[in-house]
Image (cartoon, rainbow, N blue to C red; front, side, top):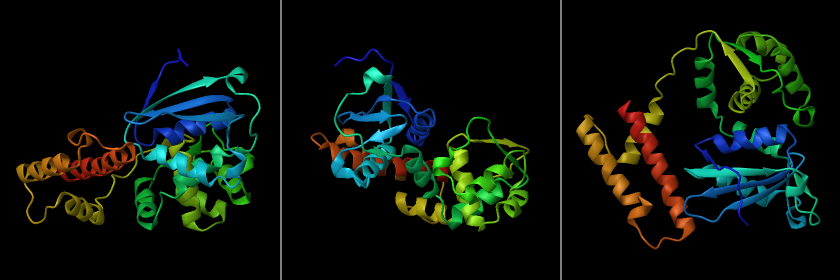
Length: 260
């Protein structure tokens, strides 16, 4: 089937934001996502939710597929919207994309990242962007208190007493709202701290230690790229290529961190 709809590029983290927007708008249609070396994944949306087979009643396969797409280092997508684009018949079992996006983002936050978020947002006033509040379908009482506190610009230390919840719970929800475009920030953010564990992990990944000059770093980076670049390994299966691309993306992040 030939689509005349434009394709849009997806960078790191973009897929979950696109999905959240479609879910929030209760879109119906066909979302097609394609990786450079693999077959397209076709997702059927009905009023913002993902239509899944009856055999996937718990949504485990849907969750696995969505996380796999998120892990692709580069991809493109198009959305063919409208009732006519939704195929009639078949399964009507639905998987909440909004719930998945929230779980996806909140799972990214560990204790170290939570402390970095507190540092970054110190002194910054947060407010909910009009029209971006998550529907009550994925909100509990704590969420509603946080959303009420975000009705006007407040700092994190002002929001926490109003939220009446553990600090990590608040930060996880703020992290989710921020990444799906639901927050307006005003004020001056603190500079992001240097995180020593990340630097050590980046050094291990590139196989360097001790004094690190630019030429040594560049040589180490090029060695890792030559070892991992899928274009230098003809005949790879699609899943092997995806694994190498994922590892290569980690090497690129490590190089950027150490060279900054």
